[in-house]
Image 1: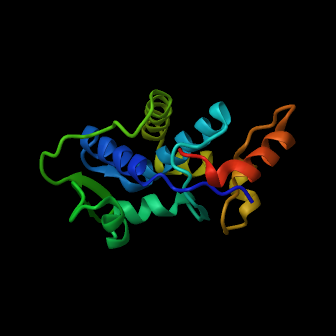
Image 2: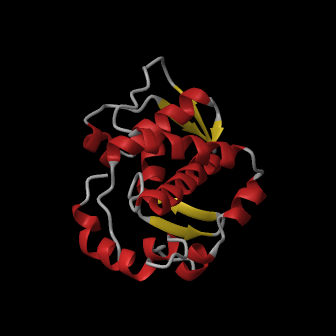
Length: 175
């Protein structure tokens, strides 16, 4: 199975950017934006942005570490070296708490482009449309378990070689 080291700083920057630019953003929209961005970046650059662990849930893929970070779980606060996150989760909405500047220095230009596109795609859809759009072959193959990056790769002539290369090198990649 292809496994990447989760990029905690990139996830924090992405969440902070989304919450700052779209106060009150729906958690479902934010998490699906991360999925769309991670999947498209993987296919374009052979590495995801976040390297999250995706769980195929009833309403689509959930990047578990990003979901925990959105809820301000203490494990991720410690990992980030912060006392709190600059947002709060009320019900299913993320809202800014304070005026902390968004620092996107952890995100490369391609990361930012794919995040922007993933967020635009996610926000342009209703809840049901986002759910349907994320119930593709990668979600179906997981059978409500953990999704595999192998299944997120689009068909391409060298897909098997790419999978083998990523199985060997993914855990050592710096995202």
